[in-house]
Image (cartoon, rainbow, N blue to C red; front, top):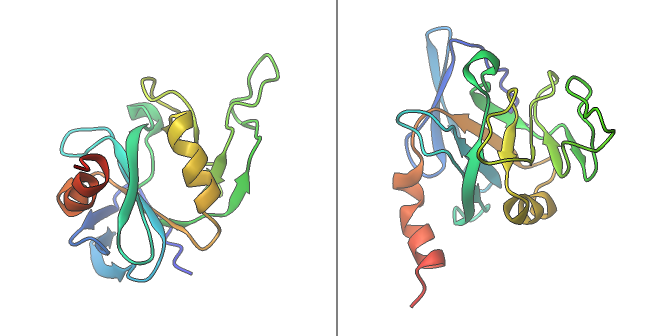
Length: 172
């Protein structure tokens, strides 16, 4: 399993549909995710897409949608991660809801610090997690498992996904 702990000075840049250049502390290496299921998160900021892309092991982008991520003070980490925990109903331990309502449903945790993909507002920034709308997180949650990688980037992934997305969303 690839489990790259991301540092603030790290970057993860897509160089093809399944290859990524990971730079940490001025050292770069390429990661090949060919033959693996993974989810690319292109963070919502300049030069990124503000979207997620679910990529099947055959290299096909089969689902995409909007996301929100960490506000500047609570920045989302960049890197390639494994899913550490998967819970249908979950309450944040660091930011619990005052009414006792689960606030991280469909949670796919990818760091020991608590960063996760989960159901949330795609208009409100998070404390560092990735929010997906309910209609997007349900199929992603059902598909993903602990062998699915999470790729977080501050670069655009759309050039590599565009052809698949046109085929999916612009069916004639």
